[in-house]
Image 1 (cartoon, rainbow over the protein chains, first blue to last red):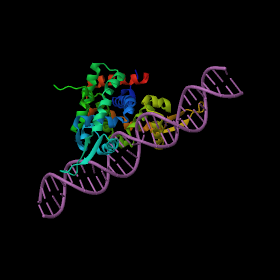
Image 2: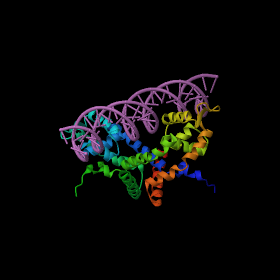
Image 3: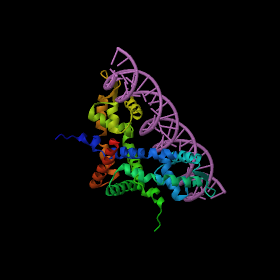
Image 4: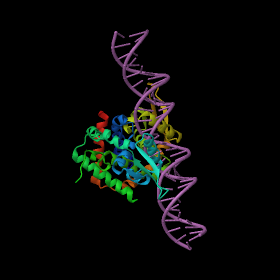
Length: 147
Length: 147
DNA sequence: TTATAATTAATTGAGCTCAATTAAATGTAT
DNA sequence: ATACATTTAATTGAGCTCAATTAATTATAA
């Protein structure tokens, strides 16, 4: 068997590469369904938070999604242009801006509710694999938050 | 316990979201080390293939990395500008373009060899978790190739 | 109070990602 | 041989991601 100190640089020995590739491939699976709603994946996960919270600051939204204002600001402007949220600067702390779910945004939930099941079918993991993956990914994410 | 048909749209019930977020966070872990080499993560995984293959077509490279020519072409041009690869159109099939590893590209491997260990430390999974994750991610990726 | 520090969102610019299109080369079927 | 289809890389444009910076506001310390 051949073996060198450079084996650690082989693509097949990476954990990050399949993580990066799988994430992109799975996001791609959402596209046909999200196209019907005329939103992108990033807009979709933003709406998921809005459906739960109804109202949230840009900062809190970014922390939930692991995205900064450089990403969130244009995403929220786009969702505002589509009529799903409204952005408003706080009167009590004028540094802060919040997004508010509109009726139209609330109505979009009804059109989105079948998407998770449709995509889960494509990905094709067993329930156990799904749970293992879920736990490991959140372990990675919790490491990042400490930092 | 509250329970609604909309629970499937909660962020915490998604598998795709932590996959997407963890992938970005882990790629971010590479940045300080890759900055020292003046390459991006995408350029880094491209070089991994080059270190193994020495010569490869744009198409084959894209298949390995799950990226298309729209991404690969500018990445390869950038690596060529840095002197790590040379691009050359095939004489036997002029549709095809190959990238060739240069001596300078080969030399870069020496500077990269410590990176995987440094990043693995940051991510902080057990060996078992790493293996589970690896298997599940490749199961997802194999699904995509069938398509 | 006043100076200094910290927080927040927005902006800028580089680079990535993808879908769709284009152009050239090659393969295939009459 | 000549259409027609396929393959390949490149290009284009929209949108995302991130680091760094900016400007405004708020918090804190002297």
